Image (tube, rainbow over all chains, first blue to last red; front, side, top):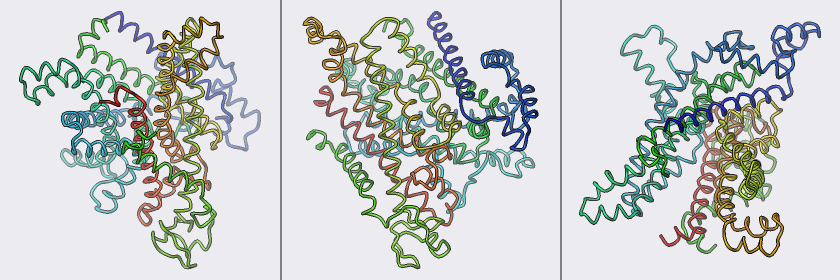
Length: 323
Length: 281
């Protein structure tokens, strides 16, 4: 188990390093120059050369990459070219908002998706199953940014119940205790609902498939033959065995959710990593793009590894490596 | 095919896709003409659905803020969005089938390298890569197709790899090798045609996914550039007029959801129809 974990850790590190290298190459291969954006069109060649020297952009690419990697590993992520602020401060401000959004919606969408999938599998082929299938396929198909807009249309403009922009109201600095919490929750409601609703579709579809597969196996027939109630067979025998693939999917859906968060953050002006990334890419803010990409790669790899460990904990066969 | 049509999901999916394809192909016939036509902007903008503007032109789903007919733009947008979805999946198919087949048939360092590459590409956050590529080069339709294609081949490569490996050990392949067929011929004529079933299913699902992502990129302003209509940039332009003209953003979204549902259902039905194990279940 430990050797397996060590192996996965090395593979994960390799992936992160690969993503960072790829990003670096792409950034420097692409047409366009950050110097033009900083200095504007009227800068002379000498000014551009001087600025290039200050930022270290005049050195050969491998040297630039090596020095960036060294500084990044030591925690010195440089300053944003567009905003002048330290990259660490920008990402440090942004990541809790994304973590809150993605984490909560992951938990909610899997809990709800699990419940829907189990009900469907237990009543396979019934009218309830068909109705829930149609709903989950629809949710699976809806793009997040559009669902977000529709929720804004209904809840913000028509019934004027919830705010549509940002993570807190303009007066949030003056709010204390309960009203501060309510303000935060009201702002969280629509982005969280959007991300969760999209997630439910995929989770329910997958759980239904895994449960149906498990329910058709011989040990379930044995359990039924022993005279156990359907409820007990589903809850104790089938669900436990269907959970392993579901947990693996949980890890794999983290990058999908993060991708969804990039769009949802754009719709709701949610101050998270996704929005920072979109803005930085548009402004060719090299240090911010590099750091945000590295952070998202680490998040994705860590999610996959966490899912592996959870799957091993749930399933003794995976733990001992016999399958 | 009959089996596919008898499956209600397959029938529905196929119907929706056929209708959309026919509309897109016959766009000049089913619409008022050019999607970028602007007449008198002040008089013709924000005409609600199912009504006639000051010039006596009927608008089934209204007009946008420039007085352009939303139905016309929706149909011409279908050409762009569906075209991008299909072409991007073809690019993914080409790369995925070659990588998967080579990795599955030629064992050794080449296979290991290709599999490693596939695993790596799977672990890269796709949207981050899409954003980077789309933002760094001049946004264009061709770029969107290439970028979507090059970030979507990994699942197909894995499927093909698994199928090819399993098929390579089967007696009929050993027979072909024994009578002296060249390796490429064995792969192309004997193995790949038998490995295509799961690939077709993955492709059907991939089209829906590619259309959604294209719309997402266009929504962020990094995909198809206005005034060329695509469902994504239509949703984007409708966002600003959500309050006084909700139909501008709603219509392309509904079209998008319908097409993606159709692709998903068709993929599910295809899998069941082509897989003998689930057929009798």
